[in-house]
Length: 270
Image 1 (cartoon, rainbow, N blue to C red):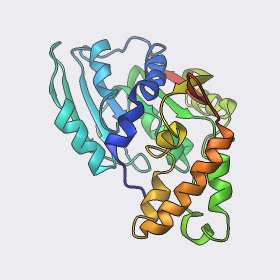
Image 2 (image 1 turned 120 degrees about the vertical axis):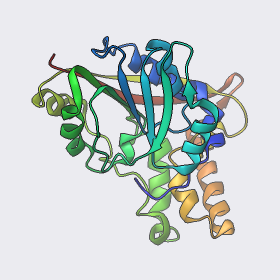
Image 3 (image 1 turned 45 degrees about the vertical axis):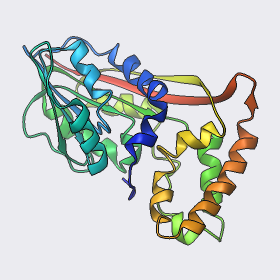
Image 4 (image 1 turned 180 degrees about the vertical axis):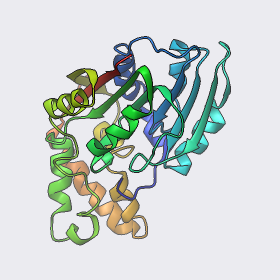
């Protein structure tokens, strides 16, 4: 992942909208073979959606993994411990770029993380190998790198004023692959695979809500590399804000942010 300092509070400002794709992904995950199941949430962030796994599998041992100390601290503080159904939630540091499961899992799930992991297709074999027979690997990623939200950020970042400082930390156009690429990769690993896309029309309240959204996610690497130069950071954000205002005009009921996501559910043979 690009170097970034994550802010759990900022990320959670749009927690409802961000959690909905996870719920839609989870709805397509089949029953798990383990009794009770062992589950890994790779890139768990502040743990708020990880905790919802216990609603579906209340007796499961669920571990959330993340490489952000701030996110893990929030997750541990608010969610770690036993759950009413007899299961347990815990959290541990790990990076999706090199995480190799140390034990079998019935479900490995990842929510809005793999777009930050260069070469993530090459990680799938290790994760599928770690699944118990009949286990599932499931993930969703933002699939809107061609949306104004990202196009404008990249164009601004390539400006000579910013290129040398932020050009290397922005997400690339190929950070997410075509649906067929994921289907083919997972199917060749022996999985029964379901891949689909959904575009959400998020209606966001408040002033500059699209900027507020991206300050919790896609803009984090820029905010991190410019953190030691507040004047430059504020100048970049102000110019980007003005571009977003034109691309996403407000209406009396709020500002609409169309947001396409890609989903995959791959079940290993029993």
